[in-house]
Image (tube, rainbow over all chains, first blue to last red):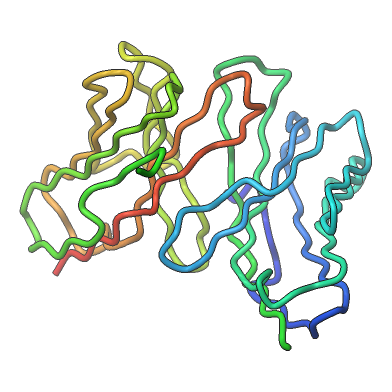
Length: 115
Length: 113
């Protein structure tokens, strides 16, 4: 049973436009969420995170929005650049559950930014 | 040198063979993980270890075993490889202070024929 879901396997956007990547989760115990970016032949790298006490976190061109009632989060990239082309993974964990919890990852979305 | 190093980078092995994937880290993190990536399935946790004497099963541990030889080393073994273990394998590290910002290795592409 997939606790973290990314329903769009791929997304294509034009350079300079907004990219919106979506993620849904089912476990109401999750209270901390992260996005990772992965280029081919490399491991995933941490991008941005958000705690459930917030509904928005911003870092430069990247903003993550959290809607707890809908169990939904999204990553916005504005403006999109060709170097943003990668696979993006959403991940979740129960920080409040203490040190024994670990990250559960989604299936990933391949973003292609067209020049 | 990379913070998290996985060896080998690529491996082709035959069904039934034993194979070990190795991971070493220079981050000084106490927590280490093994994930596998499959198309359409994302990253799934195989095993994790929060310190040298702590080993825990993840979502998909059947057919795998691990060894935490030291704080910096965590190896994954396939005792008798089968074709559906063909995947991209990632080692990762973290510590409690990094708010779950895992550091991943570059991955091992394993093909079982």
